[in-house]
Amino acid sequence: QNRAMLLSSSEKKFIEKGIDQNLRTDGRTCMDHRFFDIKTNVILSANGSSRLKLDRTDILVAVKVSIEEPDTLAPDIGKACCSVECAPSASQNFEGRGADALNLKLTRALQDILHVAVDKKALCI
Image (tube, rainbow, N blue to C red; front, side, top):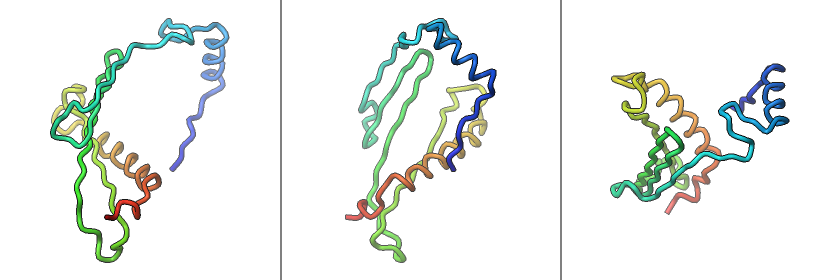
C-alpha cells in the first residue's frame, strides 16, 4: 500500500515560503544540518547492529539471522521475517503494553517491504 503524503495548500505555501527565505521552522538555514553519530557492531550478540544518535533521538537496531528448513510446499523459497520492538524507555506512552500497536504497525510495514525487496529464492542454501 503506497500512500502519498498530501499537503494542504496552506502547508505547501508555508514550506515554499521557508525555502524562499532560506529558513526552516527550527531556525536553521536550508543548508544547516544537525549533528549525528552512527556506530556499528554495538551489540555483540547480534549478527549486525547499529546505533544512530540525532539530536535527542537515539535509535538502536539489531539483526539476528538463523538458518531454517524451508516450507515443504515451497522448498526453493526462503523466508525473511522481522519484528520491531520500541523500548519502553523511549516514551512514557510505551510503558506496559503501550507500544504494542506501534510495534505491530512498524513490523507489518517492514514485513511488506521485505516481501517485495528480498529475493527469497536467493536465500536458499
